[in-house]
Image (cartoon, rainbow, N blue to C red):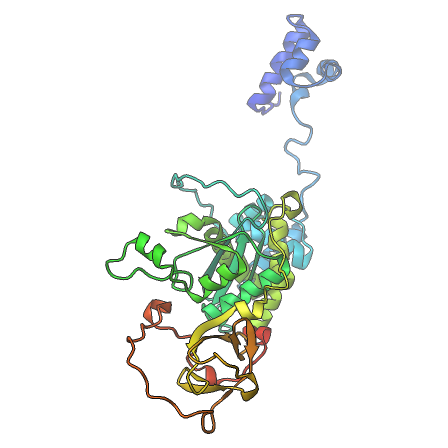
Length: 432
């Protein structure tokens, strides 16, 4: 007589059926113990007279599943995974890309088994994660946005793309960002500009303590004294003028959401850029906008529509070109001139008015490369000096030595090489 292989669950079901058949318990009680209907218990009891104990064994035991994928599908999938571009894909991401790019529908666990059998994947046991306290998410979209830059060889040597500036919403994980030529104030301002035009002004941003965002402590200066001095970087000034709060993290774990998202991107995004044969900065940004961000926000982010929107509109008084730029102040000389980056500029004769001498002038070096000057809220025309001044210079008075700019650790490099390059438009400069 052939021995029937049963699982422990099947043995328990058989025991309850035999008790019901022997009259030791009612069919209703047996149905409750097994977790099926009373009608199905009656059917199983009738089948027991013909099949015996085998009634509890699934009919497909020992036979291939009706949903088993064909051997041809398995060969096609493994042939793709053996190609060089797929050499480091894991089962989950590989299953997604096989369905997206080659219309091969296979579950991640099925694919995991195929890859282990073919020697393309090794099962790894997970270590015990470190225990730490989680900060609860904010409750609204735009209430807090984490902002950071990841330096990585995103194109694996195919092109000079190393910096990804990313903004991720704390409540929803909705993300946006750009590849940029360098992790500089200028390029970070450009990414912020595009975010503001898409969504409006967030309430707060959460960043690290990079010199772009905060002024380092002076020797012997306490945190309280630094706060009283209220010294700001160019990005700090821009955020204040936009009415956006700035929260500075004291550790990478504090802004863990954006840090973890970069780990995911360094795995998934690198592989997707490889499959798409991306090799330039402009192509990489096009891939981000058209494929990666829509997929990320659909797959990993919570639906934005389910959360209150805390973004605030950009009012006409907030001119982004005037705010997101490098701002310095100069004193108008007695000859109606001022100096900037080793060059001398003069106010247009038509702009000169009484009382302007020795007054302060706001200079805006904008992202498109233009230089604008604003006096008491209105813009004035300026030109580089190439002739005699309007009036003869007066002897200079003795004054205190000018303190060095605190940006970037004591020296600002914003103007470095500015006059040696053309003045492209904002998004052209970001793409190039």
